[in-house]
Image (tube, rainbow, N blue to C red; front, side, top):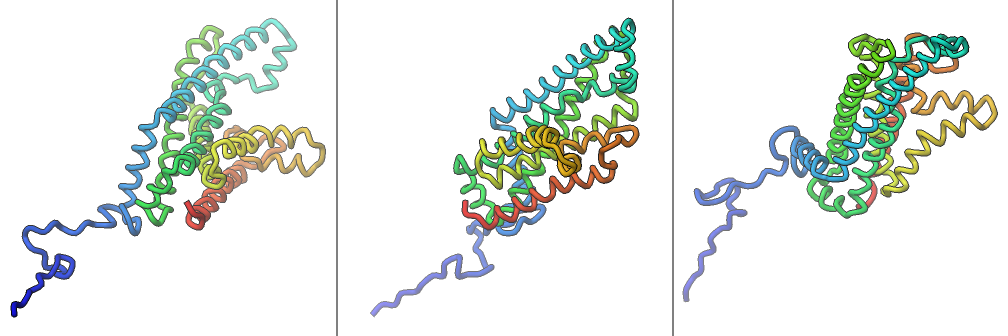
Length: 302
């Protein structure tokens, strides 16, 4: 009778691997651990690659630059025309004086209302497309805890929205300078107020992009998420202004789109929040949807 000797498999050898055996794969990778799956740095790099390789994303980013710069140039021309009319029309001069007489400082940020819509919609699409295309299955299979993938995507969206808005506003200021000079209007892009407007508006657009991404995760539908974003930032302020009643007058102050003016004003504007109150309100509008989206993302099926 012959005997058969069973050779232990590599899995049974424990840590004693032979010279020809491949090393065991690392589940957590190098860098910051994200639990089971790749590291957070790897997830962040993956989300950035997905972001910059989508043609639709590049189109929306380019559209944002064109809109901000275009509206900056158009606003510079309109402000110059208004100042020119004020020099010969007493009524126009009184209206010009009532607005502070320094309208040029707000010219570079005149396109922010449209930039927030574009980048907010981009935030919606980046998250909702994960579910409409089925990409979420592979994403969450690679990152089982889901939260690191959501945090990485959120970080990419907010940083790019801030940087792109800041660069676009500065470029709009450069384009506006020669137009304003034709009307003898001066714009100092290095002044404290110009820098404040650039930073606050860039942070605001980044916040809108984060809200949009949260809506995309909550609704899981591109059209529904974008309509919710438009309703919050464009429809609600108009509706609250048209509906009579002290409640709607007071509630309008707490809409996210009405937090920018108190944050950028040189002095407190009547019937608006204080600057610190506006900062807290805007922060709450970002934190609450983001936390809710992160929680539901882990609880829902893909």
